Image (cartoon, rainbow, N blue to C red; front, side, top):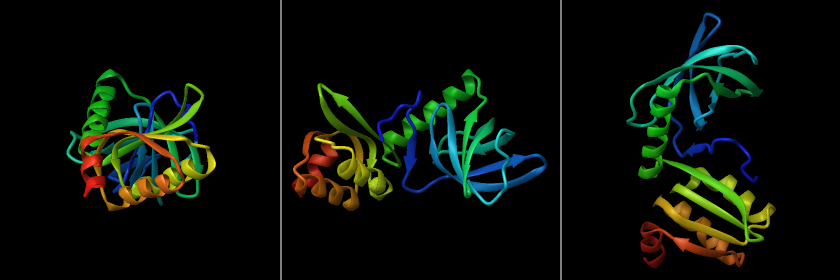
Amino acid sequence: MKEQRRHQRIRFKYPPLVRIGQLGLSGTGTLENLSLGGLMLRTELPLKVGEPFGCEFVVFDSPLIDMPAVVVSKVGDLYGSRFQAGPISESLIQGAIDKALASGKASILSINDLQGRKVMRVVGGLNAGLRNDMLYGLTRTGVEQIDLSEVTEIDSEGLDLCRLAIAQKIEIVRVSPCVRALMAA
């Protein structure tokens, strides 16, 4: 699960809606994850791999982001795509990502090797939306430490994940003020 992508992707606890259109068909879906390079969406619309499509979405209270993308993968009703974006679109996406992370409505989970140790890092919201990825990291990748210094919001599910890590003797090395406050309560 080590992140090897060019751009880190954010995940959502509550996926935003996305409107899409391809080859004369249009519909809606949910935005499962987002990066500067593309998005993953879930839709019943039968998108064709290798073909361009239009998409527009709002990440919580961001401005409308409207741009073309190309479908690069499909698994069931889940489609991976790559944006065909210019610098203005990238700026809109980056702004939306930054705001969603700062508000805790979106999350990034990454696992990196730092000085020979596997460290899991969470940025943004630590909540049930990260449950599967965090459990995978805790049980399958040999994570030894967790850095929560950039967590902007944590809920009871996120706190339960921290307790599980501690019970497995995984060291939490840094915490943000919101994590510290909830763990002390």
